[in-house]
Amino acid sequence: MQTAMPATQRGLSFSGFLVGAVILVLVSILGMKLIPVYMEDKTVKSMLVEIANDPDMQKANPRDIKMSFVKRASIDNVKVLSADDIEISKEGDTLVLSAEYAVKIALVGNVSLYLEFNPSSAP
Image 1: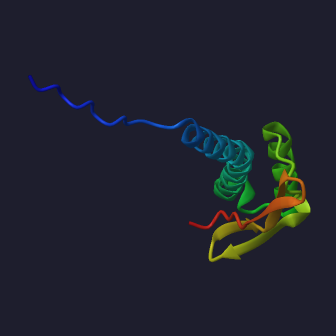
Image 2: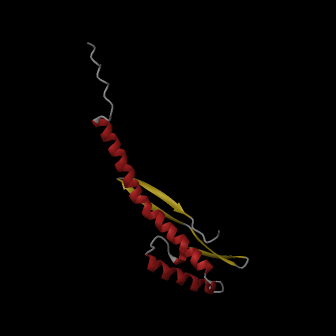
Image 3: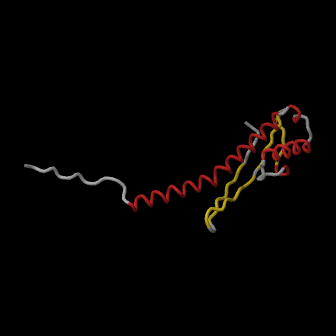
């Protein structure tokens, strides 16, 4: 009578599991720190587009445009950009608002990420 040979074991070893878990935790921490920054950038961009497309702002002076930004920023809790950082220009009859800002995110110890953003209302 022939006995069947047992199949070799397949699966994940404990050390492989630990390495995978550490990688998953690091990626999750990185995501939790980056997602809010990119969401805030999207909010800033949408605010600039809304202000630029507002018919009342087309003929407004720069001070009124900046005050509109300050009001919207306080409602949306935007703290990475101030009204003085906004550049106001006209391209033909179109109002164009743009800004440049950077965000530094501390990761671990002295390791940080430095992200630069350039939102603009131009299409």
